[in-house]
Length: 245
Ligand code: LAC
Image 1 (cartoon, rainbow, N blue to C red):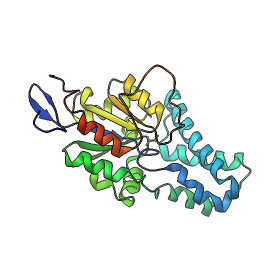
Image 2 (cartoon, protein in one colour):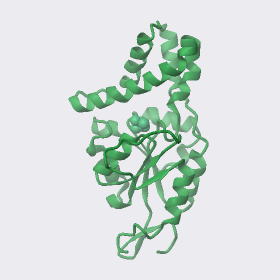
Image 3 (cartoon, rainbow, N blue to C red):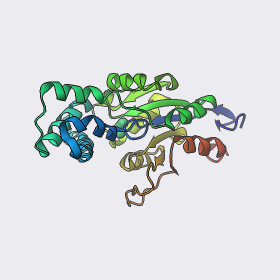
Image 4 (cartoon, protein in one colour):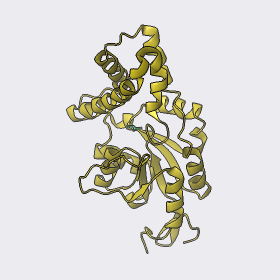
């Protein structure tokens, strides 16, 4: 191996392709509780959690039903559900404002330093999201991380959602690296399991100690507390996944 961060096929060094989940991994969607406090008061936390849970449920159901509507639609309809469930009537202005705020989420503090380390070692990094590409680009540009990414890969191109195996195969194709050199990094356990089942590598970011991983017997390749730890583990374990080792 020519460089500690590189992997090789038949002696030719190649970088890894690393796809980062966006919501929950690079940025925190539950931060919306701050913006919901105007309309939801002390119920802002539970409303934010229901909004996120419904957003995911809607995307899973759309995928299963093969009745695709993009993630912006899932997000809008989930907000409608969550506020109605708590008896909150949003004005058009409040709804528009909350949806706009969804594109202004802040980065987790480890996101930028983690990506910087990996980029410095020549790995190819991309955002890989259920979100619509233009929405994700706006979000990541405002958050100041877009320039660290070589690509933004959206499932919208496939008109289905994670964890459909198709979208992980699409990530690998877009990255142009073999599946064993293609990684998904996600704090969402269901996303990590989806990537493993589709045959690519996966790291689970256990952002809080008490978060439980789905006990399906399908384990991640790595479990890390944050993206800086992920970068350190990848850079240190060079060679262990080399395909010609
Ligand atoms: C993403 C959401 C689902 O794919 O976390 O970015």
